[in-house]
Image (cartoon, rainbow, N blue to C red; front, side, top):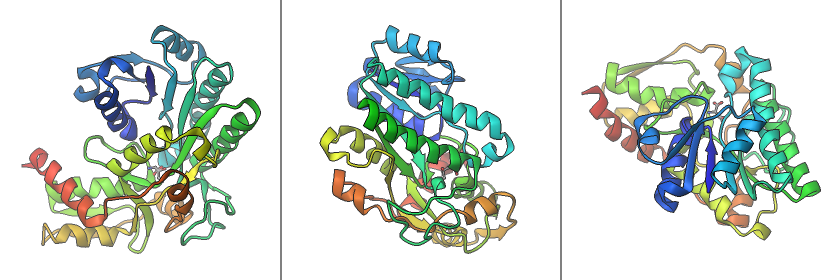
Length: 313
Ligand code: VAH
């Protein structure tokens, strides 16, 4: 069976639903520190699980005969700056728990999400290469960079089959974003429908790499489906979708809601965003396992507004 740890988060929710559809509900076990939405809790296996508790993780793996783990639990960039020690503990202990279970051959395959947050101010900001200077300045980015080093170490030293993707900011309408710096790119659609205006916590001109959730889920399953020999990068693969700034999203929304207005009130998250690249070179992922993105900004805007307008009628 497949176990998703962090199944109620922004990625975990859609990943769980996609995996249940693909393999059948009985083959997928969703788990999280708290219960999820009705989609997650409605059908299939669910376990309350603290990802930092090795014995608890091992017990779920044993009881459900799990051989593949998607470890999606983490504290994201904005919240992690407020609780550094807790973020480090959650992000790293959960990873060691799963890597050690794989090292002990109790599970066969691991997916672990990294992020463009591993890059810092000294990283080339345009078309950031797969291999480049990485001096992250956030707790979250440091934990993701360290996690990548450990994934590569466990693969090289213990032949652990762990695979990883550096996600850009992700946009979806099914779950609230979970305390990240790119959350503005989701909130803006909710506010556009509810209030016809949005006060952005990131400034005009703050270009960031983004991706629609369906692209991210397809990439996640794509890298896990790829033959082991094709996965040549065992730290984490760059992945790119579309890069844009808050004013680009506003312009895209105004094509549908003409009198939508945006204003700018940068907060502490501006410094986090300024330390990240503007665009990512994902040619290695395209070469190694056939990745290509599908959704551009106007397509994302259409999907978001079409699927959210019900909620704000
Ligand atoms: C965050 N959404 O903002 C996450 C992601 C690249 C951004 O890692 O922290």
